[in-house]
Structure formats: C-alpha cells, structure tokens
Image (cartoon, rainbow, N blue to C red; front, side, top):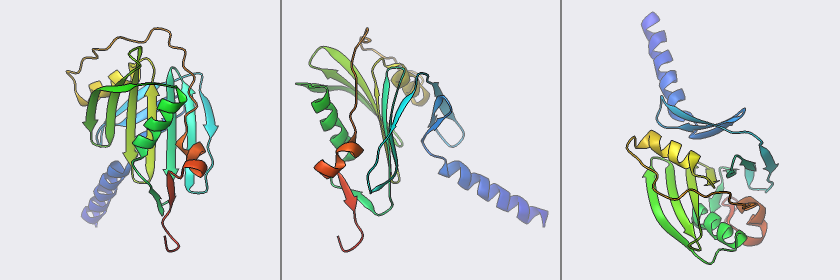
Length: 194
C-alpha cells in the first residue's frame, strides 16, 4: 500500500512541477520559471496596475513598476488570435511611442520565452520579453535592461549585455492589446460556428 501511495505522490508532484506557470506576480516579486525546479525572482516596488476588460479574457492587467511595463493576458479557452500576439503588441507599442523605426538588434529564445532588444529611432534601447503559455500572453517592456539581463543570465550563464543603458528615459507607456481589441479585433471567440 505504501508503495502505491508513494507512486501517486511522486506522479502528482511531477504533474504539479510541470504545470507551474512560466510567469507569476507574487506580492512584490515577478517570478519566472526557468525549469521545473528553478525560478528567477525579480523584486519590484511602486506598483501601479490597471485591470483590463474584454469579453474574451478571463484575466488581464497592465502593470508599471521599476522601469518595467507589463501586459498580462489570459484568454478564455475558446479564443483564438487573428495573428501573432507579439506582433500586435509591437505594432501598438511602435504607434504609442511614435517611433519611426524599431530595429531588432538582439533576439534570444528559450522554451516559452523570447527576449529581444530594439533600437528605437537610433536614439534609445527597449528590452522586450515575450512569454507565452496556453491561453496566456505576457509582454514586458524593460526600459533599463535589468530584468532582461538577469532573466537571460538564468538561461545562458555566459550572457553579457552589450548595449548602452538608457540613462533617464522618460517614457510613459499605456500600450494594451486588450484595451484595443474591440476596435482592432486582435482576438475573438472560436465557438458558436465561427
């Protein structure tokens, strides 16, 4: 009997580890899943959140803290995107910051993460992190590069951030795919004969 109980405990422990989300916000920390046993924690303060509403989302918010801007979108299971979610976010971001050019100068991919550095109008750098899960999209704009570099070093211990750090970049972001969905039609339900 003990052997069967231990096998079930081991099985459920494995399932639990595998089903942990890749990104969570807990108290004043961002938590990123590196692998089934390891997480990268990034402390934040002065947090400002806005709940975003759309009939197709279960949970959505934008968060601003410590030179970070995050949009978290958890859609209903029967929702599909009408294109690439990250491309929609990039298009909105470019419009909102009134950028003439956004040149991709670095891109790294690990499991459910895409980490990119963009040069904006040959003037400043934006570090972007895109995390995708089943029915979840997380877009992070890191104005300083601290989160970007720290997270990347958890995947590649030899990584060196080789870009000029933004000094006091005064950029207020309010980019939201969810907020713009009703007008732009980024995602929709697939049930009901669609």
